[in-house]
View 1 (cartoon, rainbow, N blue to C red):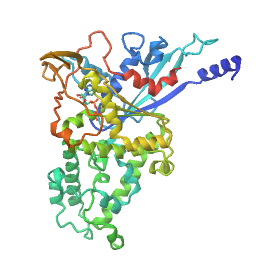
View 2 (view 1 turned 180 degrees about the horizontal axis):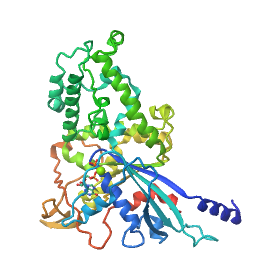
View 3 (view 1 turned 90 degrees about the horizontal axis):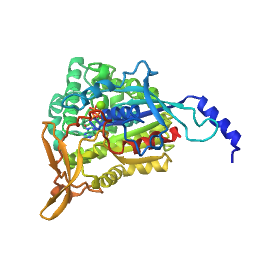
Length: 463
Ligand SMILES: Nc1nc2c(ncn2[C@@H]2O[C@H](COP(=O)(O)OP(=O)(O)OP(=O)(O)O)[C@@H](O)[C@H]2O)c(=O)[nH]1
Ligand SMILES: [Mg+2]
């Protein structure tokens, strides 16, 4: 045991040093990243006032004094659009914040009173919290670093069956009699790459998530650059390697291979090196209910995409991630968002379902000794829970306002606690409507378990 005086001294040192934490938020498109970060910043800024954060001990104990935005460190990264998001939520009628693309960040200085009693009990401390929002699609590109162009090309689905076939029909047609050995025609390659990117976008619109290369969907400042003008060549495999190697540098094959290398070196790697490697904590948001609502194809696809995405958190010594980078994330949360879409007694099912969906990656994480916890939450609660009497039975229900301003009372359906089987899909009766946020008046944004999630992500730093 440390002597009391030694402990005081240790505390003094700890507090003299400015504490810092980089917390990253990710998830696939529309998973709820912007809503989560907006609500998080809002709750911390209103801590000690209107915010309800009972599951965050520092807040419950009255030790959380508040938070202020301060200038961020990375001047090259856009600022997280907190003000526009709040302006949308405070509009009349309230609106959801606009979709975002790319990475953004925001720095908060959190003032709190440390817990330990003694000499310093009354002096406040500061935690500098960097919040980073980035698209989960970017993580889908990690496996691409384990490939060269030929093996990557062979690993991609041919996109010629099922729902994919229709989405990629133009691309397949544009490939017709493209000879890998022929001299590359820049304009034609650009056209085919365009058709491929349109296919990926259409697939995403249709709700598919297992899409590579991820940056084709969110090109940001790379839009139109040749680095994004490549695509897989269906039908080529390892057996063609020797023949392809001897092709001239200006052949179709060699041109595409060079662009693929460039993409790896200048797009995928820099994200991991400059950003990902520096995150301390991470939360991965998943719209489980949205996928459940959309049917078996979408749900299976989400499961595949998450399997790929979670490889970026596989710290096993032999994992691709550990071999290439030295990440330092020491705590991870996974959360099913938009829990206000189902009645409260379904929330535990939602967590079980999320855990079932991520069973494999969770196993790897636990094996690699990365602490991880699963949650269900609503960053911005839009409904209230009720019960209705119907034919002598009491059933739970939700009241909310639809995007068309109509007030409705619904029972949205049951969430399976295990991966849904054919039977579930056959009788599934989800009445899953999008609700708009409620006017908040003078109060803080209502939420479900955002405080519990915050406690897991940063509670230990507020002790
Ligand atoms: N009911 C409810 N809906 C939510 C909640 N969070 C997000 N949504 C819905 O999900 C949509 C997407 O949320 P965003 O926060 O914009 O998601 P995102 O991950 O930032 O999306 P992109 O920026 O497009 O990648 C919102 O427009 C809302 O319709 C929530 O807590 N409750
Ligand atoms: Mg967003």
